[in-house]
Image (spheres, rainbow over the protein chains, first blue to last red):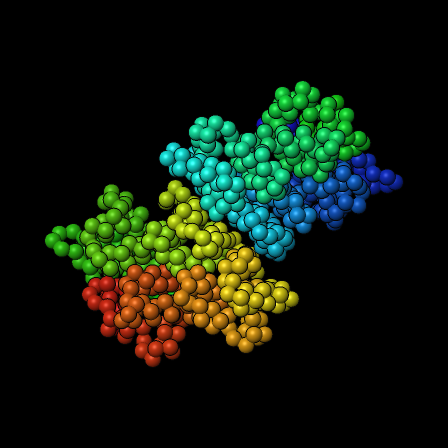
Length: 313
Length: 313
């Protein structure tokens, strides 16, 4: 479930006026901006952007870029884009940075049709396909894995084939035992099977070989390819647990990363951030709001807490 | 341009009745069937199928399967399906037969959105994704090429980057010179670049290295992978010339293949079969109608000639 708190009906013209006011004059009223956009859903934000352009002849997102700065600017920039565009932007940043884990995440979390929409948005925005950019920014076994993931259009089904799960669990087990992590057959299975079938295969693996496939991969986490394979499996097998672990790492002293925190909160606030929050509390015995309240400062903190549905915090 | 001759407006109910009559009683009136369906376009055939089901409570395609046989049955079966379904059926047959050349053709000829429609139709029909079936029916370098091709969602653009074309022509040239045909970089370029960019690269190759890339590959045609790479390039670079060569081979004494002939005629009759016919005549100094008239017999011949717009032949 979502954490975003948005009124049932809003007035896009009044919102555009309030945002204009918050941007005008000396200094920017960041709190005024957050008060509006932190309480509007995807459809409402779209109407506000349209109303703003119509009223003031400028692009609201561009204006925010001028008015804001730092982590708040980045978070608002991501939040204000429609979800498919946002994901395309995140993918492009990740490609340029060589942040392969994010590419795995962006390609494995959405359903087939949504991911296709992201690929379309990417092409419209960058005049290249996502796969050609990924391919020209990576090499070797990592490229082979990423190319399969960003080109996948998996069959969306709940049906699974138990015999196939057994056979492919065995293939995975043999490859991991022989440390042939990037074996063609591993790539084939992970890159083409439906998510439901893969989950059946991972469970079968666990039943037959005692440990989860994730645990078996852990021992070889020094290899980047293995870490990416692990991320692939986690994204497909246990989305929310994966996202909780990403947030936890991003809030840790050692792994502190505002970009990552922004990415998860902005992309999940209208989806399943409530469950991720619950998992976070279970795992860390501290609420996500408390952790953010302690680790993050300023208007950026206010914005994240607003999206988390916890502004009175 | 199309070769199919279909009246501007038709009566689907009258057509359904005529087809019912052709199927009833002793023996089947093949000519009566061809007379109707050989003169109806995609949209009209769809209406006929619907009208037939409504009137007679049975599926027209199933009925044809019972009434017809041999090459005519196969050709009618393919013709009667909507194009995306038809391509999905052809892809599935090719996967099961290991007919990789057809998989290359089916994935490289359509534009991105059309090919995506084929992938959707495939999933709806076979409850698997095309890529997972291709992957589990192939191995090694061939699998790597095919997987890229059947997963591609190329950027549809006419813009090209001359410097990129030059750089990638050089990469292709070096790989071919070193006989590293399945080098990762070759697969990356051929599997992910837009068609327009690839055409620019192939022309650049020809300008810089004197021969066309196709000619350079010819010398290594004993390798199946090289033949498939060549097919990929031909499909992208010169669709109609490629299809003419397929028809020519299918009509030759040595390579005679009714399935192939059916595939090209049925899939292109509403598209560009006229240009393919013209190329055929230029290349062979005999019309395609004459060649078919000489090499093929019976109602199957009549059906093909009807789709070729040459029934009075």
